[in-house]
Image 1 (cartoon, rainbow, N blue to C red):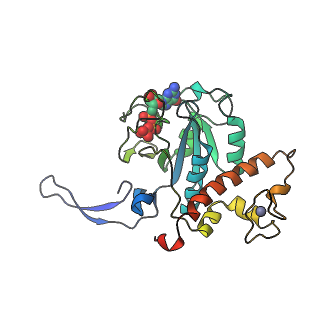
Image 2 (cartoon, rainbow, N blue to C red; image 1 turned 90 degrees about the vertical axis):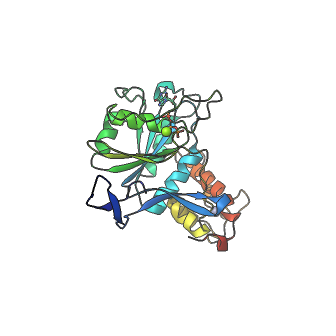
Image 3 (cartoon, helix red, strand yellow; image 1 turned 45 degrees about the vertical axis):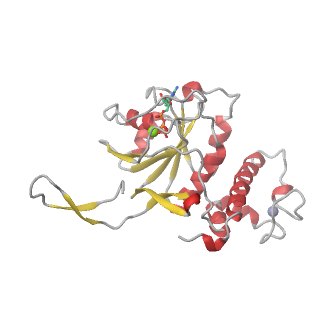
Length: 279
Ligand SMILES: Nc1nc2c(ncn2[C@@H]2O[C@H](COP(=O)(O)OP(=O)(O)OP(=O)(O)O)[C@@H](O)[C@H]2O)c(=O)[nH]1
Ligand SMILES: [Mg+2]
Ligand SMILES: [Zn+2]
């Protein structure tokens, strides 16, 4: 698997043979609900870099929250890169709000344009050069929606030394799925793993408990609901903490946006009976 450390036998001719795969520190995988299977993408990862686009394809907050839930579950820190900021228009989404929300979740974010490494951040405090610093000495896996610029970013981070295959966006701007398998790039200062883009990220393998643990902010708030163990956090839920939040408070919108993401995943999780969620 990409990222695995292996032992090789001394080559007789020029044919190296893998004799042993060393124990993995961790592995990141995708849940394939149709096949009730988990597909490993990469092993021995230090940080998960979630790339999102400020142009096309559209920014999807729900997808970011799903990746963050996974990162939390795997105990791997996550960064978020707002890429394509050269195309950003404040009418599409509020990058300030999104970054504040992420900071609140202890997730560092960066503002970049993969096509221009000298692009200076205009809205966030961290840009491309900060990303370079933060990645030093680490193995980072790049994940995200198809077409957001993962491969371009990796190319830029290697100073253009490694050119990754990358396609033009289709006419609908939905991304073209150009990276078809994970690939490891051993750059001078860090190791970067490119991965194929996704359209969505299924979390249907979670049990309800695991899901709540991966949304630890929601888990903590939910203890404040009067009937915390079975509160559905709906408008008519008696004594629900979330329903009592003051709309004038600054954090309310942020908390409710997290609740919204959580509920959407919960719906998916509840659709699959627990006995089907084999590990
Ligand atoms: N304007 C602009 N275009 C970008 C930027 N980054 C990438 N692109 C364009 O977006 C398209 C997709 O870039 P890729 O790097 O292939 O995206 P990806 O995330 O690797 O896509 P998959 O491999 O399908 O997951 C290409 O046409 C790039 O030229 C950016 O920062 N600004
Ligand atoms: Mg790619
Ligand atoms: Zn509640």
